Image 1 (tube, rainbow, N blue to C red):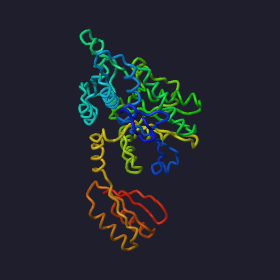
Image 2: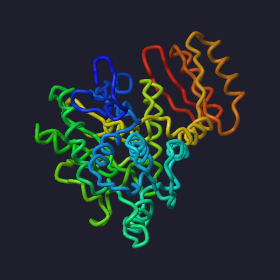
Image 3: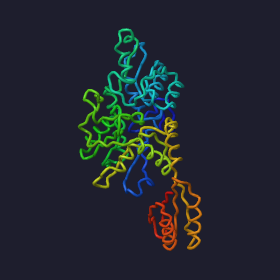
Image 4: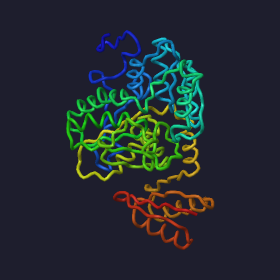
Length: 389
């Protein structure tokens, strides 16, 4: 292996660690109005595309396979990482997934040669009987199949936590030179937030660890889990709530909108869970201006079908903007009147005007027509009217 020349003996040597970390990237445009120092930990740069590469390697190395087939429940990322590593090691794998995960993940697993078992559609099922976890539990415990299968069991495997304690946490501490004040991560198997949280708290007990969860168990954020309201026996056993300072919930809509904004403003293609975690970080009540690290579990490419739905909704509700700042009264009023006359019932448009005379004359006409409008002064000599017909 030669890290400097990026020459490796096999694919598993690309899995990150303190001397070979995933990137930490500062956000600028998306944080300009909020004045927050936020860095994204881009786990898409793991060799198999997600934060789960770290735990898959640790768990599979320690697993006593002995001719058995590996089986594991997954919303996709752990499954993909396990199959990639297992392929490199010559180990057969089956993955149980919820039917509701993106089709792209199922295709990826099949491309890798894994046998894919689909469970019910709920992405946040109740264990031990429901969903992919219930399916795997039944196979592992059934007298007919228990001698043929072995499972890493990421929800209870301490190596899930240890992988992040050994790598992700030290990477973040080293990359921020110990200046980190807040760490935001989602609840899923809870290995990331527990492992990183434990390491950072040991380094500095004042670091705040914030967990992010979906607003509802019926969500569309694969890989995330709603912890609040769950009975104790249903919460992943590896979660250590003693390192969690607060829990924030985020809706699907806010998560997807944030991820789309991240792509358009920063050029970072991430999955919707990144959108949820970043939304929480941007809207959290922070008392100081400390450095914030947000974990970004994966990229956008495995979620294009999910994004498509939100983009179609956006297209239907898109507000067209017309810049009339180059015109002065009365021409600005004439141009605005033409736009208003061409509006359809229920349509909303934005008209931007460049002087107060134009603003007053257009606003007067809107009132005479009994049209609803909102006014905002964006800057000197830049006035926006949002008009609904």
